Amino acid sequence: MSAVEYRTVEHDVLVIGAGGAGLRAAIEASGRGTSVGVVCKSLLGKAHTVMAEGGLAAAMANVDDRDSWRVHFADTMRGGQYLNNWTMARLHAQQAPDRVRELEAWGALFDRTRDGRILQRNFGGHKYPRLAHVGDRTGLEMIRTLQDHGIHQGITFHMECTVVELLKDGGRIAGAVGYDRERGRFIVWRAPAVILATGGIGRAYAITSNSWEYTGDGHALAYRAGADLKDMEFVQFHPTGMVWPPSVRGILVTEGVRGEGGVLRNREGRRFMFDDIPDLYRNQTASDPEEGWRYVTGDRNANRPPELLTRDHVARCIVREIREGRGSPHGGVFLDIAWIREKIPDAAEHIRKKLPSMYHQFKELAGVDITKEPMEVGPTTHYVMGGVDVDGETQMTSVPGLFAAGEVAAGLHGANRLGGNSLSDLLVFGKLAGEHAAAWAKAHASPAIDQGQVDAAHATALAPLERQSGENPYTIQHDLQAMMQDKVGIVRTEREMTQAIDAIATLTARSARAKADGHREYNPGWHTAQDLRNLLTVSEAVARAALDRRESRGAHFREDCPEKDAGHGKHNTIVRQGADGSMHIERRPIPPMPEDLADIIREMA
Image 1 (tube, rainbow, N blue to C red):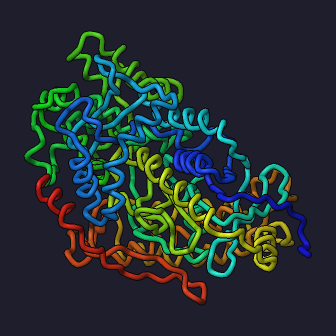
Image 2: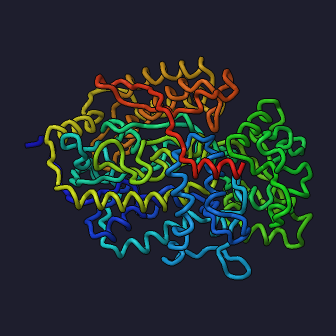
Image 3: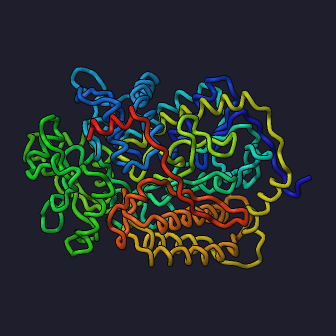
């Protein structure tokens, strides 16, 4: 008998995370006749997906009929520097349009073209206008629609619960252990299939657009359960987050601002993005801002403005301007959408209609009217391309019965994600994960729960409360975030990353002495102590993987290795827990691409 009381809940499929991927997976699994439980760290409707603004990338060809899944596939592979799981890139490009139309059939209200089709906008790295959107509130509409549809499917929601460990029955998954955040009461969920849909790791950094839930929970849970992590060195820093006032530093400024005509300027008023255009894009890029304006207003014969190059490139250009003393007063650069007043008569209304959230965000939080003056922006930790390694077709990990979808899963995006691919990723692979998890659950009997594993999870979780003395977990978290921002940020070196690994070892030792005052009820300090364990795991994975990749590729930029290396371009970085509990790095060769897909890449080149 366990020394700690807990209640047991049984499901066929347990989904951990209630964002876009988790909800879509739950809807699919429930629709296939299985009992589904969804565990969410906050309240339903508060998932980070609601913060996504720009749109869902899908080759529907509503604005430019030259678009197709083949072009979308090629764009995604090129943006990912060909480290992508090409099966996932193909499935995503092929299935995204159906997922968007499905979401519309479930009630999503997309912006429309004049003839009534779903409107699509330009975004960085995409050859044609491809993002289906709802102003700049696309993620919010997506979550609203999925919740409204899913609430009628008989899904059980376990809100405000934290999962602290996955359980196994031999080699297969058996469920999870967690607690409700309000009262601190423990729960054991038994399920033959578990889907991780926990999002990203942004809270490992000091400046991030990510919400408080993004502490790498799913990555760390999978890692401790024996699954592989892949390509964790690739962390995307979105070029445009708010930089002023300090209370809102890092909050995202959607790429849709640049998609609607916004331009980047330094303190001298110069559009600095023209200073560094990669050869890959040079023949697509206009040197005349007029041509950039024609492009974003729909002239299919105009060229792509440099503000819509890939996010890693734009972020590094902004960092260059700041470091060389040409930044804005508060340490960023200027993003100017107000300049379109020179081009269209009712520009202010146009901006408020196309970018309503951005208008209100800057008006309320920074006292800036974006229809009249530029915004101050700078890079913010935004997305991790790396994650749990999954099978491209089923989304199952190397642990039987454990699946992953969305940002927590690796493969689709390779070395760098294109804007808008994240939201369609949630729908495409959420559906596939739900489909295959339901099939797995039906084919396998209910697992046995190992009481020893449950007791060990309880003991680990309760340790910060039982210590007589120790360090404040908030202090350790703050030190970790500052160190990661400084040592494993946008620009990296071997010396700094080695220092980071040493610092993580010290911080891990400190976290083993972390003490949370009080008891289990209503105790945010205790919650932070739980998060720390996961944050330290994913931080070490990022630092070790980045140290091993001695080249610059996609979102991973090494100042001491600034060029691509052909050898490194042929493998993925695998992070695996050793038998002794230590972290190991392996290099896994990328399997050859089938000839039909290779032909698409050559054709689109």
